[in-house]
Structure formats: structure tokens, C-alpha cells
Image (cartoon, rainbow, N blue to C red; front, side, top):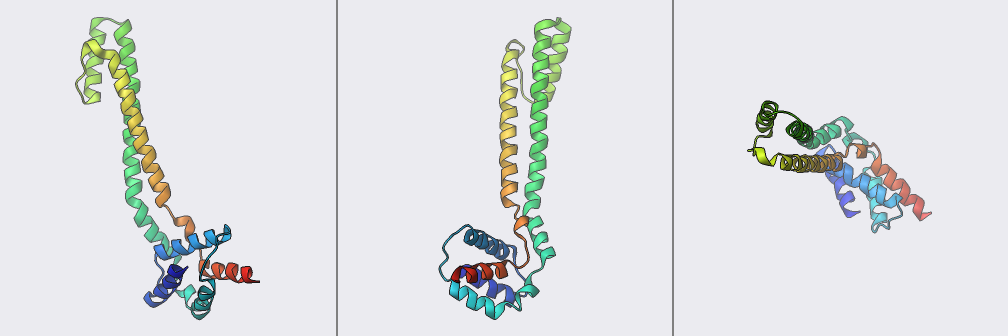
Length: 182
């Protein structure tokens, strides 16, 4: 609660609210609404009363959304790169399964042609007498790529706090705190 009080003062003195200040206030409101006990609620209410006329002026939703987009932009780029890598790994695995099928059912020329193409696409050395292992190796590569993609996706979801950008969060905290006193 002390940090939210400092945030209100900092935002007013700076003339604009930062994304961190907005998200902390949102998290505090969420905590209070969830039944969490807050120490310093009287001080918050007193400080809010003193600053309430200035707080709407420091809230700039467009600037906060822009700041949030700057935070998640590199994560979105990384996610797209990893999405492509995961799709490529899945494609390579499917092709390795096709080559294995060709290796088992077709003649020497088809086998050599398929193995050559698999070697080119894989980017690592493949031995012709161990073709079955490459299905397993590409499966492992596919799973690793999908796991990296999933971690990047979670990082993006965790960093995307745009849903916390709402006007009047400090006012709502004040309302909840004064309602609890009654």
C-alpha cells in the first residue's frame, strides 16, 4: 500500500503515470477485492483525497498502451521466430518419416535421392545405415522447438499487462477501502 501511495505522488509530480505504477495499482486492487488485508488503508485514503483531482490528468491510456507494446514487442518477435522454428522442426520430422518409408519400400535411387534431400534439410550429417534414428532425432528436435515456443508464448502472456490499463484504479481502491470501513 505504501508503494501505491508513493506511486500516486510520483505520477502527479512527474505529470504522467508509468506502466509499472498502473500495474501495481491494478494488482493492489485485485488483491483487495480478493479479500486480502491491507495495512495503511487510512493513509492511502487520506493521500488519495489530497491527490484525487490531479490523478485523472496523469492517466494517459494511449501512452500506457504504447509503453506496454514496447515491453512485449521483442517478445512477440521472438515468439514469431520460435513459431517458425517449431513449424520447420515439425516439417523436418514429417519428412524424416517419409524418407524412412521410402528407405523401407523403394529402390536404391529413390532411397539415395530421399536421403540426400533429408541431409540438406536437416543441416546435420545423416548416415544411411542409421536412417531409423533420424526419425527419433527429428522427433526430439521437434519437441525441443515446441517447448521453446511454449516457453516464449508463456513469457509473452506474462508480460502482456495491457488488461491492467484501466482508468480510475486508484479511485476504485479508495472506494473499496472506504466500503470496508463501513
